[in-house]
Image (cartoon, rainbow, N blue to C red):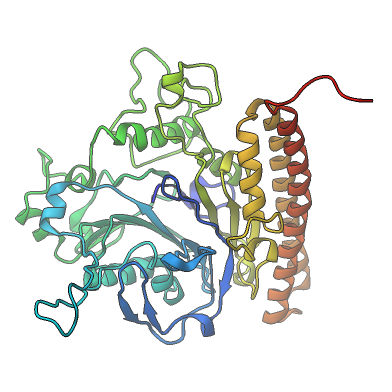
Length: 503
């Protein structure tokens, strides 16, 4: 599953909140309708069964309430993807990663093996369940953790017990810190704490480039890992460093030609956007190019980063470079050489924000967007609620403008072919709706602060849900207006148009 992640440490963000954000992208030629929901403890399964791997897992009692962005069509499982639980812990799962043959030879993926033959005939072999994967991670972990570090520990234990059939990167955050976990082969994993004053860029490629194995296997201050990782590395000759300084990207990841058109350009563009003067990006001999394998996993931005900065880089299509498919700067070959960040097959974007300056009852916000990011907008949703707005939660497989997902898909498909003509309307729509979102958050926070302790827990949740409904209705109104405008422009640009008319 192609995705792009950015993680922003609390001292690098505009308001002191750790920010976890990821585009969920479907496979080429596939589109997965999404919806934002609240999962209550009584709705959380106690006996979980995965669809892809045919794996059954008994889950703990007393799960927490949490938000999720599952598939609207459940033929391939839940795919909860991103959410925040009642303890104000966020999880984003997953960023599909790359690996290499040496790792998979040492610790193969745990893949589902269907049964062979019939049970009452000679030679019959029963099915063998596979491991856990993106379909399962959020449902298996988020309801049971009360800190980001606990999230790493729980997922790590599940990976060691059941294994996985794919390489994945998973983010956890709480009010104090962000942790990033990467799977290594079928059962092994590493995790690193994001520096508070830095941000992390992650395309679909194993990303961590420095790792303190001693810390991971002792105090675990900023690094965590499978308990046998040292032996796993040594026994299989995975450390490629000349000086003993473990580089996981070299040991566990890939440096293929495909990475240079699919992965590294996305990290390159995000970093040149957020650190425009930190190095010479455009000179005759730049330090880094779209094809560089040594782009840092994390770096300190030149200023604090905002929600809008995160949305911009996760919507990017290489603006200002020859690789922009909507530009005339480059040749036709250049404009279609690199995989954009803001691609046609986005399913959803969630920016998970845990605000340290707010009471726990209203601390967390999940900014949600659907379909292709260059053409959509974000909707801020308080997560300490019992329900989410119907406009975002009622998505089905039926195409309708009654839901934000399908409205966003339609607008993107219409606007893409008329980019220059429609982008001014889209930018005004994005500015207006994002401003309305910030204003509503400010007003709601102020009202709750003025109420003090007069409101009980249930009343606070109702107030937050009402705020969510209000911003959803504002976005619905503005989205309908944008659809009208884009449809008019696209209709006037049809190839069967003719200037003469009757009357």
